[in-house]
Amino acid sequence: MLRYADVAGALAGLLWQRYGIGVEDVIATAPIPGSYWGAPEAGLIGTRVFASGETPVHSVLHEACHLICMDGQRRAVLHTDAGGTHAEEDAVCYLQIVLAGYVSGVGRERMLCDMDAWGYTFRLGSAGAWFENDADDARHWLLEHGLLRADGTPTWMLRP
Image 1 (tube, rainbow, N blue to C red):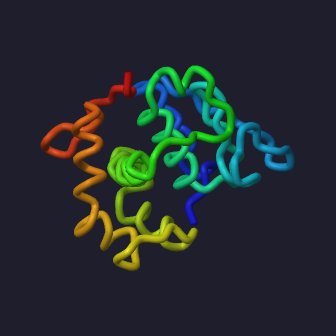
Image 2: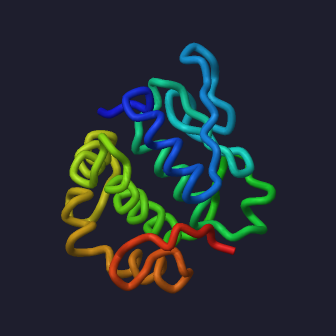
């Protein structure tokens, strides 16, 4: 599984430059602030994602996508639990796959494999099958909230 240390510069740069989301490095032996699942999974506080070098890349992207997909009111008080609806959670998963294609050293295929290895569950049995054949509702949610363009590219904006 690809770890944050493997692509830290590219991933943190993309999130900061495109969305204004900061990624805070955490010492590997320390607890990760705002982590819902506990170390090594990424944490969320405000507009910051917290990760150690051992944090899986899919976790950093997933938590960052929660920040992107939630509204500004929830983002302003965010600490640990992103909350949201089932539809928003699906949109988060979809967007993390899309964004992985923009991170040097990651890519969509690697993201799909790592999501499967971690244990994301989808009706069709794999992240790839879901993304290609069963994620129209997630894609529509992202389009409706102005986070994805009709051609499938990100708008590079946070949900207001």
